[in-house]
Image (cartoon, rainbow, N blue to C red; front, top):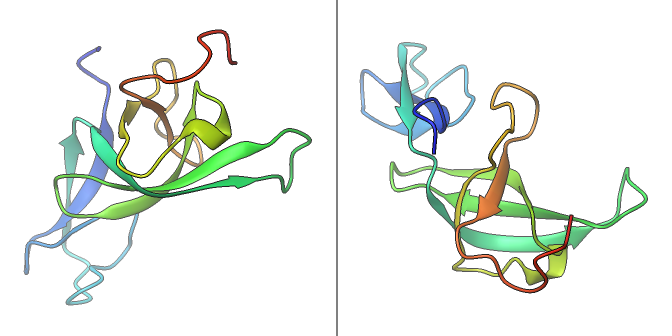
Length: 116
């Protein structure tokens, strides 16, 4: 994986709480947040298949990172119904981390290899 892969999250300088894409700390409401890079490896804690805003079904998941925060993302590269709770995920190769919703992919793909 390239050195620039990963996710940028915020770490509160006052209380040490990690958060993702926040203007204020969710615990102490401080605006003194330090940007830190994570390797982006996480675990799916909730997964659902959604059909809104697109013709095709897609996955929408909540992922917990070891740094201590949970965030909503889309898991790509596998059939939406094959993303399961407990699956290990990483940033999708070639995805732009600064554009909208983060895209992650399964570390251990399941199902058909030709799913796009």
